[in-house]
Length: 243
Image (cartoon, rainbow, N blue to C red; front, side):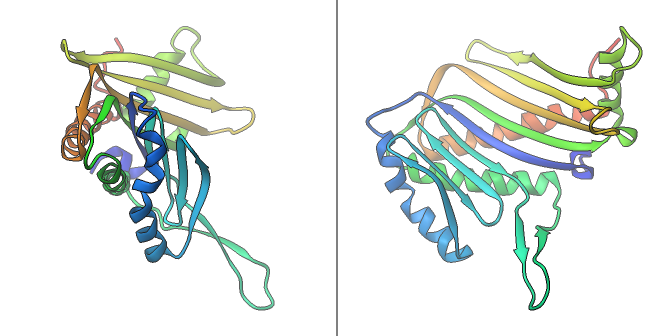
């Protein structure tokens, strides 16, 4: 089991694309069948932005979809729903917590749905693929690798009381691409004692945009997911060279 499956972690998958101002206005219409399907399955779809070059919508199962001229993003957050009973005040209920691995699979499947509609006939020019793991956890029960990262950041002083740290590191690369990861560490012992937020934003950046239709994008998503999870495991296990 992955360490991210033992903490409250949620995924984001994103594609950075070269803008195509001829095609972008047609994305909402291309996504019409997907919207209709989700509406039929879930009973409600919330359209947050509908403009000529962007469509942002949220489904009741917790997925936020952003189809913009420069980005295609699917993000999961646990949804809250109000439950009412006669004679009682409404109560908020949250979707049952699931493992990061399962949520990432669902997010990838939804991204494939989106890509399958906007890149079925004509390719998207993909500049970057991103896989994100965002977690919130107690500082006294961290995976060994995350604990080692905090100790490394605190080494010059011995103890940190507050952090808003963002680090971007190159992980690997060839002529055609490089892998990198943003590491964001946020905590404040004064306002939220004992709590930490860690975001790992793994990215594969291409030297030249890959002009890919849906099947090629799906294959790159599969490869990127594997590489991102491998790196996330290294972070959690403390396999980075802190000494």
